[in-house]
Structure formats: C-alpha cells, structure tokens
Length: 221
Image 1 (cartoon, helix red, strand yellow):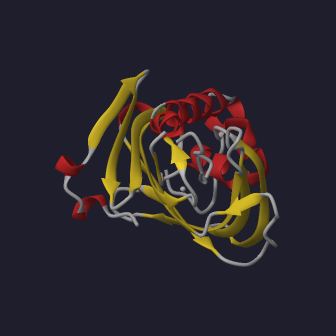
Image 2: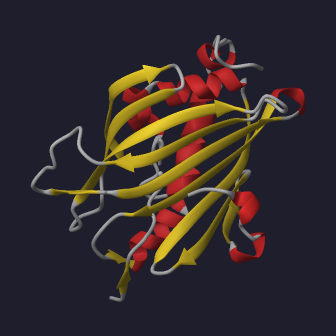
C-alpha cells in the first residue's frame, strides 16, 4: 500500500491523533484548503505541504471563553475527549497562560504509538477578546521510550472568537510530522474521523455546569 507522511491532530490536542497539534491563516490562501468533510456542524479541511498534510477544523460551541480555556488547562483529562490520546500529563505550569505537557497517542497496530512534549502559550486579543492557544513541540523533558516514536516537529493552534448568544467560533490548525510511514487508511481516518470525534466529545463535556459557569481571572469574556 502506498504510504506517505501525515500531519496528526493532539492539543493540545488532537485528526486520528488529535490530542495532540505554523499558523497564520491571514497569510494563507483559502483556495489552498480542500474540504474533507462537513458533518454535525464541524468542517474539516486539509492541504498538502511537501509530503506532509495540514489539518484545519472549524465549528461553533456554546460555552464561555473561560470554560473552554479551563478544558485546555486540565491536561490530565485530555484522554477523555482527545481522540486516541492515551496519556497526558502536565510537566510544568509556568503561569496561567503558559505550560509544558506530555502527551501519548495510541496508533493502530501494527504502527508504533507516538508521543511528544508541547510548549503551550495562551493569548487574548484586547480588541475582540479572541483567545488563541498555540503549542509547539519541544525536545527534552521526558526520556524517549524504546517502542514509542517521539514526534519532534509539531505546531498547533486553537482560535476561539466570541460571537452572539454565548457562541464561540472555534478553529483548530495542525501541522505535524509524526515520523515514519503512515498507510492511506490511517491518513483518511486522521483527516475525517479523528477531528469530528474530538470535537463531539469536547461539546459534550463543555455542556457541563462546571464549564458553563467557569470564570477565570486572566480571561475577559
């Protein structure tokens, strides 16, 4: 079967391997993106850059900004909503808007699982209150494991823009080289099933009172 490298989904997350994963849509032409799927209020786009695929997801979620930021802050809970994220743990909390964390992604047999360490920074636009969470893969922090492939090249960005009626426009971008060869069937899952399943679980969790009523001092609603 023809094989090629593919960009994964993580977080902070999470593609087939969205959990887990540069970004400037203003500088990128929308004509470059191809619509992969549009189901249940979630649009998934992809494009090929060299021999690596990039992923972009767009949807709307009814939740306060503080609620979704809280979800991203709770690293240990990533496996509950990040598709195929089997392990996640906080390594260092630098500040309320900066952290380092470890994530492991369950790849289908016979492929080896992947893991990575991400440095995440949170920023809020003073004019429209849009929140961005950007993550970049970094080296060190956690020793590499014999049977797990370490992802060393990954960039992800979540953008949350407040709208009317308590809705957020949410966009996710991922560029990552998972290493090794990925079969076509796995690429198809990563471009379609993974992103939709991740957002589906996010939306379920974010309906909980805990997130709907969250107020964070460093986030302006």
